[in-house]
Length: 328
Length: 298
Image 1 (tube, rainbow over the protein chains, first blue to last red):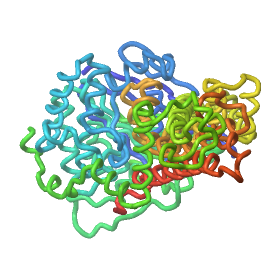
Image 2: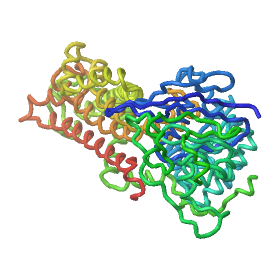
Image 3: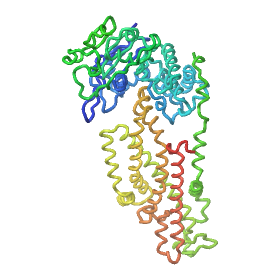
Image 4: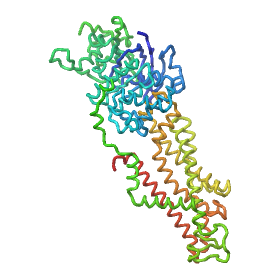
């Protein structure tokens, strides 16, 4: 498979009154064509910020302090954030779906107005063609009676329906990559499953890659081919879904897996939460950020700075000194 | 694929649909005082447009023989010193009042919202420069500022409009600035930008439509104030030049005969009062109907 997007050493920081917060600290990852990639981590670990940075949607006091985002042979970070070249990528090449379907649609414009706007802008369609296409797209994402509902306002739609509209809107201009930023967090469980299934079908149909940003390992287990685990602004482990779930090597990943129930294991296992809280990102120590919560820590962890990602085998990387394999 | 995902349950759970338009009118017309304001407003517009037809006499040329008549069957509201019919001049005065009111409010709204939008959306230096200038303008009482400008520019309807427009811009800019500041933080603005919208598209296509209801209310409420300010300027003699018919000037002309012919001042005075009151009531009603915080109450 060909590589579609590669992010190298991305650093995004926020200048606050109490200090500089490095929300994303040297994150590197890649996305292949037609791939579904999961990006998992706790709240505040920099998942969303890393994705917004990729699209240069960070606004003050945040700033992208370093790194590059290679897309179609170009480092798109060198484009002016709101310039025409960056705008031609947003929506048309890389599109995004957000967490809150209830607030992601403009309340004073009809669904049709919002869906057709992008078709006219990026696909250069005329109004009639755009409207026809919008109705078609609404049908594809499973909105019944699309032709009559196109003139409705967002408040006439339920949360699940709005997220369907967002999916239709994001895919309307045939982007190469769809970034879904916690797309199902705000929805109830039954709707979540439907929407994830729909998203998978839709990216297959439109031949796009999908990045699922989530704190829910269950969501990525089913859909993602590869998973990146993030902690405190860095990627701590990456590998195929099988590797991450089968042979996790970073203590944080292992901790995450211990606190979710699984259907494929013997009954009676206790769910163990990870003790403590994620670190404050202001004035982070040079040592491993997970150290205070880690059960595998060794003397070296206290002395040496946070290790780089090291290969476990093939494409499976982890960022840990301890030999976690033995003690499992 | 489409059929498999069709979920009719969600659809049937959607709330019954009430047309926004019908909801608006129901709330708007709920109070009788608002209906009264609307009727006055309609009568004003009609008398301004059809002043030529409605007015019984010539507003500028009087009949000196009939000067200072008390109200009677020929002159329903009496005549002034030059023998001009008060009713006629009152009707023609609507033209001045409404023209000054509407044009001023329109100009001030366009300039004010543009400045406020730019300041609120971009922030930083643009905001600092624009809003400090607006603050400086705002620190003058509106009538004083208009008087100053009218004194510099001279009288006449055009200069009254310019003076009052400048005086009304800061209010609009301030409101729009606040709206832009809060609206631009909405998720749908980020979603819109993630789809590749330019700043201009975000401002005009997405922030402005959301800001319109409060702006409309503000503009309606300003109308009354501006008509009053115009009357004030004319009363002070720096507004509409004679022989043009303006209510403020009529009050001024009449007050010399307050004891003998009180109707000369009272008729235009009551007209001003009625108009300002009517516009404020309509503005109030609009606010009730358009304020999103009152959504779903009725």
